Image 1 (cartoon, helix red, strand yellow):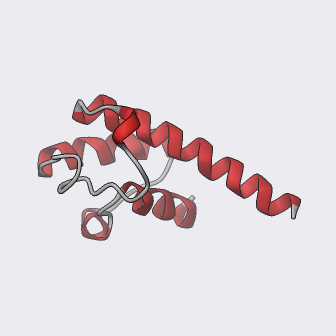
Image 2 (tube, one colour; image 1 turned 45 degrees about the vertical axis):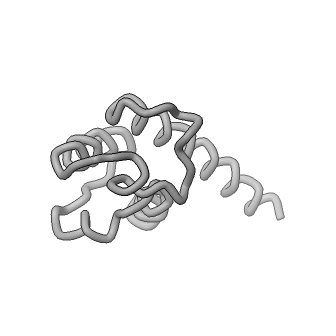
Length: 87
């Protein structure tokens, strides 16, 4: 149970960090960002916004996100899953 609790805390910390980065990069209110938020549909990101955001996320979390993997990252939650799987 404790391990699951630590995972939840880590995930929440990661979510908060990602929300802050998304808000800064896309100029949206952090309070409007959820795990289900679509970068394009909900947050108005274009391809350049996404590229810049992914570069910032790579630096922040120490993961490499190859261009071919970008199409599977549609929502904020997808970023969390990707980082968790590749860290």
